[in-house]
Amino acid sequence: MRIYPPLSRRFIRVWQRNLTVYRQSWQVSFIPPLLEPFFYLLAFGLGLSGLVGNIRYGGEEISYVRFIAPALIAITIMNSAFFENTYGSFVRMYYQKTFDAMMATPLTVEEIITGEIIWGATKAVIATVIMMAVISGFGLIRYPSGLLLIPLAFLGGLAFGAAGMFCTAIVPTIELFNLPVFLFITPMFLFGGTFFPVENLPSGAQWIAELLLLTHLVDLARACATNRIDASLLYSLGYLAAFTAGVFPLALIKMRRRLIK
Amino acid sequence: MTAGECFGILGPNGAGKTSTIRMVYGFSPLTAGTLKVFGMDVGREHRAIKARVGVCQQENNLDPDLTVLLNLVVFARYYNIPLPEARRRSLELLKFMSLDHRENSRAADLSGGMVRRIVMARALLNRPELLILDEPTTGLDPQSRHLVWERLEELRSKGLTILLTTHYMEEASHLCDRLIILDKGRLLVEGKPAELVRRHVGRHVLEVAEPAAGLLEFLSQRSVPYENFGHRLIVYVEDGSELYRQISEQRCGGVCTMRMATLEDVFLRLTGRELRE
Image 1 (cartoon, rainbow over the protein chains, first blue to last red):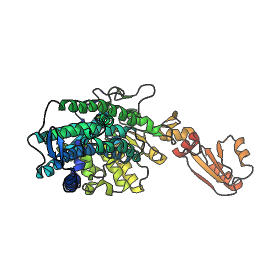
Image 2 (image 1 turned 90 degrees about the vertical axis):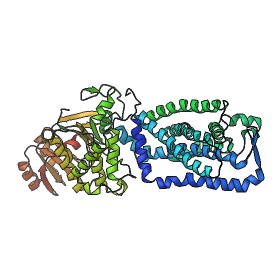
Image 3 (image 1 turned 180 degrees about the vertical axis):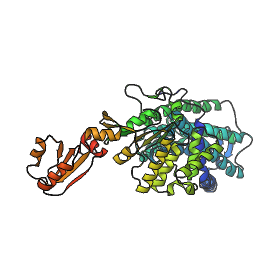
Image 4 (image 1 turned 60 degrees about the vertical axis):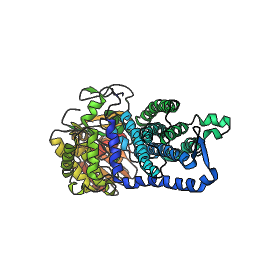
């Protein structure tokens, strides 16, 4: 039942399909990444930063809002891609039977799923660009290094999208996405170096936080936004790339098993 | 199957109709044996086969957020059909399916009959040589169903090869040049619809309500085949007029009717009457 090559450039057709649907309602999809940074920056900037003061980052004191602004982008990258490739993909697969229709055409399962994951990454990029515009309005991103956030959003989107797609391949019902959200996404949101430095955790917990995918994405986003690009980031970049390289094919294999029966 | 024919697969629920056609378009792996489409092995040359096949699945899986026209144009992209050509073919097919007035409606707002016709139009976008239809008219109103039949006949007359599954015997005898009846994955019979009726049932069917006491014996003596349901008796006979007169005059407590044998009689005789759920 294998087609060689199982993965051709045709996956773009699946991506295009999602883009076409997105363009029907893009006005609605624009609102969350536009408003979210406002809310967070107001709450943390006005409310919390008075209590927290400055934070030591990279051997320098920076304001608390400057510390969390890049983390907000990293969180958005995580959420956009993960939710697109869990709830969004599941609805297309299970309720709308979109994948079934595609499989009757020359498209392969691998192309359908690759198109979906790249679409998840694309949504992460779209949300990142909108957020960057807002956050830059507050003067919290340094350029030109800040522009690296865009390719970073794509890579991070691939990683979290592939993880989401893996969940989609194995959950029996849509309600069960609560589990990976609660066990995978929420802990990263809280402990991934987002709202306080990982170094503030007790040393045992610090070690666990270093394993979290988001921790590395946050490190990279913060370095881009504050113009502190150096060789130490290669480790985080490698971690993200290795995760993607491992989980992406796994999602393809699991999805093939789910769809071909 | 031979090129240009309409071939039907009939069978009760769970007979293996959908599984069979899913294998043809590569949705299900083969458990054993080989399957060739256009002389190509489905295992190895899937993409080439699917490019030449149109599939109308059981589910109405249109994109609910897109308009009718966009649904078709997006689908044409999966076949790498360039945009102007995709638009041209889409409009042409919507017209063919009598849907040209609804091209800008959202798919979610359409009736079941319209959705079905769009799914059929979509299956024709790649100008297939083989059209596969899985229960194309299940749940349709009579008007839509007849429209679908008319269009299928038109396509067949233009030389398109059609493979279809159905639960409607009327549909099968109407459309199919040849058909098979499956049950529990086994092939029961194969042939032209009219031939199958003659071979397995005969020409006439008598339905006898409240059969009189001696009727069963009467039939057995003449070795006329029948099915007994207590209050109702179904008799299969080549020429029923004489027998009809005899039964309705003397051996029937209720109503006795005579009608032409149909494919439905063949189907029920071969697959039994118990429910398949």
